[in-house]
Image (cartoon, rainbow over all chains, first blue to last red; front, side):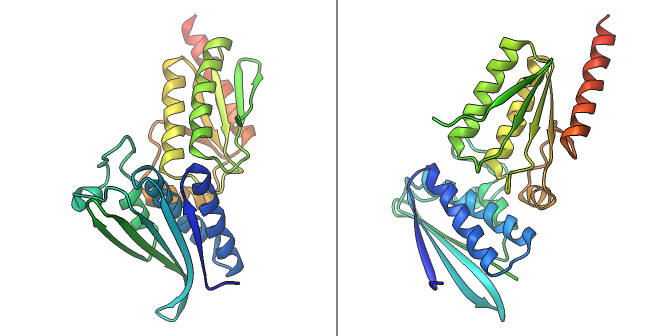
Length: 132
Length: 125
């Protein structure tokens, strides 16, 4: 089992592949079904954001020890327009496109750790982790 | 392009989602289902999501949209078979699917649909 894995996020098929890769890795590590479902759902939201708003990017899957617990850490990186108004982007119901605006704040609620950095004109990087 | 099959059973339509859906597939289902309701005059739609391992905000919105569109076309929608882990995740995600009727399994969903269709027929008389 490699320590980390990088998957491209160019189109919606890649979003499905990203979900399946996260699921497979969590099954290997015997995460509970609810943990798997939460992280895979968060990954789906963030992967879709990278494809639609970020104009493509990639996802890195890593296994890590966080607070002495086995964790999966996912990093989503794109080189799209970035997020100018971070406070709004993290608010339920706010959307710059035609989504529901639940993606970022919803994904944050589904994980143990959530970090987001964005530079307008450069891109966005979101890192999430869920531990056992 | 892939399509999710829609089966007709009397005055109801039955959809069983058995693949890991990408977004276009979800949108195609929305279009196909509304066309089929219109063409067939179906009064009820049963959507079985028991094979879905996750429902994210996009799929949740698609389910809510189908239900709302069907309602405007005079058909009731019942979503059946949601896995417990999916229900937990949906609520934490912030999607409670308002306006979407659910049942635990296909059998109960069909009963609910039947009685709701019969009731509205009786009222129409």
